[in-house]
Length: 214
Figure 1 (cartoon, rainbow, N blue to C red):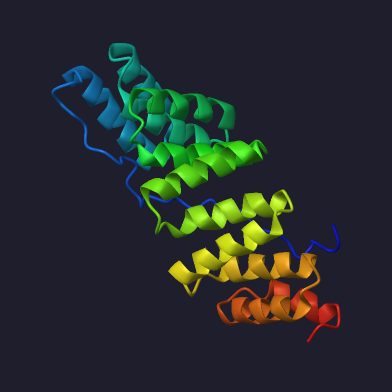
Figure 2 (cartoon, rainbow, N blue to C red):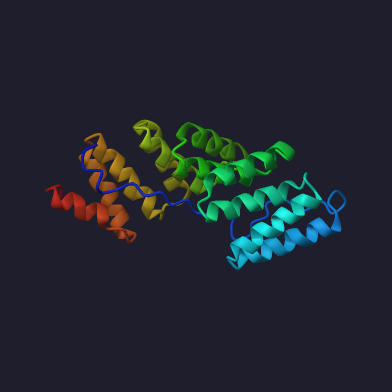
């Protein structure tokens, strides 16, 4: 695949800010004990005490098997631990209970990406866009998956959308440069590499210069 050694990055950045909860808990539908374990699980997760977080989310689910946000947040912890198969099961269960937890589609897309289940990742990132069409990272990550599949047109479109939403997104310029290079559009590749370098990522420009492209 040519010299893709000037590489595509997968920056699966958290899309929903630092907080892990995307919807409010309905205290009328969850028991007080389940909520207590759930909240402590969130606190442990924020402290990166992941095994304790998993234990508390699991205990919340033992008390209330329909606690969608407990599945969702345990799934995020599994993603943090790169236990992608378990994460997918939890996100899928969360969505079966509440299909409006938008973050579950995004993070399940990340887990699918980690497992190279690319078409499923694209489906979940696309569903995320239905909920939130202005989320930079989802376009970026969907572009990465398209690039993996050699869907160059779609990859370029998604990197371009990410750049339109965040004109200082160095990784998007870098990776769009990689895709342009892979289809021999060297002038566009060089232009993007120069922009990425101006934003602090000069790897692509160094590579192109080493290939005599200046």
